[in-house]
Length: 233
Image (tube, rainbow, N blue to C red; front, top):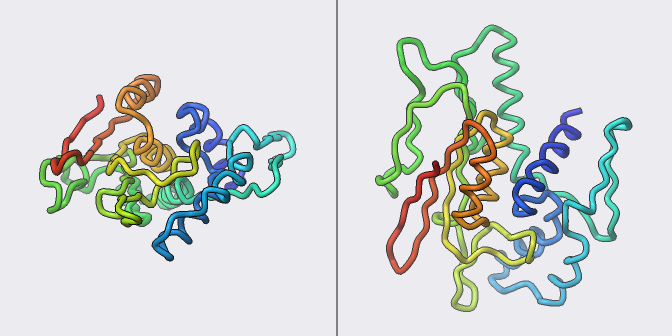
């Protein structure tokens, strides 16, 4: 049940982001993991080979049977951009079932929040830390927050700085030096949308968030030695 819920939600977010978030990214993600370890680019032929294996439209979802079908050779799933958010949601729900409603669940940086601590207006979340003091310190409750991006995590290969995030539409590691923090009603949404926001343009992110309720974004981007902050909305 948990896996099927995650895959259904992933499909919905893939549609909303035009494939910028895609759990079928597995073949590309493995190529770039090897590339970072060897500090050399993936062979272009390997990227081309997997082009037909990556794409959420190649997943058949069968709700009545609680089943999915991967319809292309070499397909496999990577839930690294969504599973932690869902797990954190479930932990918070379990705590609430035991009467613990004032809680913070941190799943490796994907944070899900219940009611505020006693006597407080909310949980104090410093999304920038000391490295990015221009980012706000937020007071949050009954929501989720997740950060993704390559401002802090990347590798230089052949003179180009590549992110650990791969665009599932091209099979290439990002080079735009972007970090996205998303605040959403649930951890599963915040987790997946944070990854997608690193890939999408600011215009598309604004359009995406406008169509959804109770979601905010803080986007950091390095350009010409400067770090620019965009808050949406």
